[in-house]
Image (cartoon, rainbow, N blue to C red; front, side):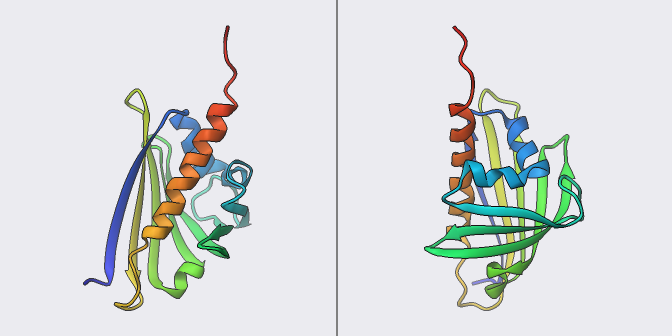
Length: 156
């Protein structure tokens, strides 16, 4: 068993991939209105929305508990539709020495492919891989898609 690990999960969405990327890169504070039972709040702690180097704080509900996550936006690549966050404080740091979250969207197909990548280093061998946290990210992705699909105007 290794202390360092990498986990990748992909999910297709029918909603606009460019909008999905924009939400995570520039407007993550809107996610709480799209997934209110999972994401309680997201605030910029330092810097500005949509700017690498900014620090944001998430308050979320997971595994029956209120949780907190403070992360720095390491990179935003608009061409590749990729955003990378590095966790610097919060509940995950109780179990992981390092934790990086990357989300990217491939808009080249009929549906859009969202890829979540978690790179982490456990504090010890007793710490589980972050499958439950990955599940949270995938569920929030589905919530964002549902929100956007239900708010798309229909044409007659």
